[in-house]
Image 1 (cartoon, rainbow over the protein chains, first blue to last red):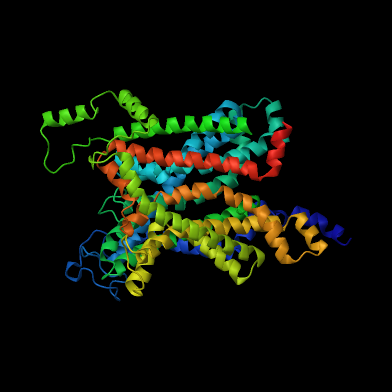
Image 2: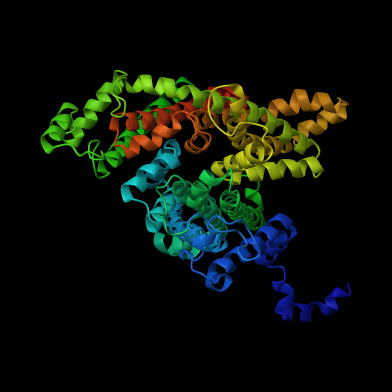
Length: 300
Length: 310
């Protein structure tokens, strides 16, 4: 009862009310997930190193500055050793993060650009459009993505942008399905009916009402597409049809490192560890964000 | 039920035909032909005659129809890279290592994963739950070629317990099977855990406990049976995905399986082999999804009864 007296000032100050906002609650759930939080920190460190790569190491990624000490083991001077062509391996790994993360992010963005509108329209319009989209998705479920990516990569002769396009082409399916499910569940809600009754066009309803309500599946789809694209890039580069040398790519380095593995273990260990760590932290971060933003999706 | 099966089969057939057209077009739009890659270039007239012999000078749609007519009669042609045998023969002998290693990987990985997931669900938030989720996350996120490389580094290079690669005596199979087992184990650990937890929270389990049934009987007779359905239905697609061989595992462990042909048939523009491999895998996926759907309907009495009422 004493609360009544303090109620007006509490209502007047927006701070108290804002503290319970959905985003704040999502952040609380995220912060309680220690694995996701740790993964976020690790990923942030990797991203910072990738951005400030020139500050982290003195030589360029393709400078054969240490030819006399080729294949040297890790030391205080070369943290990860020197590779077979006399390049500082730590530098190569750090610049490899640029390629891997850059491809991961741009491919995820591309999947979003493709999957978000298609998913929203399929969910909102339903009917024939939805049927066509679902059949296309069925096609993607039957063709093994890696094999189709192999064909496409050979077709485009590899290269960074080709890989971004290919991973986007396979990444949009998830985004599309997530957005479609969300839009479908919102389509019959009262506020959408109200908008329709007021004469809003389908575009307006999708753009102004349905997509803003699909922010969490969109974020989740985006974050989960990043590790998948990074994995595809590494796989294709490992097979030699992805990112072409001398551009440093972890998949390519693992492929080279395997030939040296029995004597020069550092050539295989460091790119493997870098790739595993980055993909692992990106996936853990994505899982954590998914659980935090939409607890109903948990375990999917 | 019958109309459901017929409808799904027809839709699968349509999917399959579209996939075959897309793959055929993609394959043929890669520049270069099967006779352009040699170190000693062939004279143009000989090349033209070879192309004519193989029917490669015909318009694409005719080539496609010819090939599909062959597929219809189970004749997949002759692989350009080893003209002494048929595509069917090549696939039959190259599939054996992939099937043995991948199949064993699934058959070992899946039960291990189920046990792990069950233990995790029954002892929630205990150390075994953490171990299970760690294994599930690692297995599902880390690419299989990274797992394979690490396996070789640890068990063959440092510990020297097993040979690193090859095909032959079963000792050499250990590491590739372990690499193949990672994904099914992780998938099943995650599935089993969430399915068991779902069922354990159902009201009927509370009723069984109230009736005084032993925990063991509840778990093995009731919970396990009720949570088995999703686990059974994902098995076939996963088996197909893994027992057709992984390009990476086979390349890293030097296994003479199907995997290498995926890459080499694209590189060498070996159209009949490439088409056959892609069609084989897509068809197996189509069939496995179809069978899983039917199994799901058969195993789940709620769906079955629902069908009868209609």
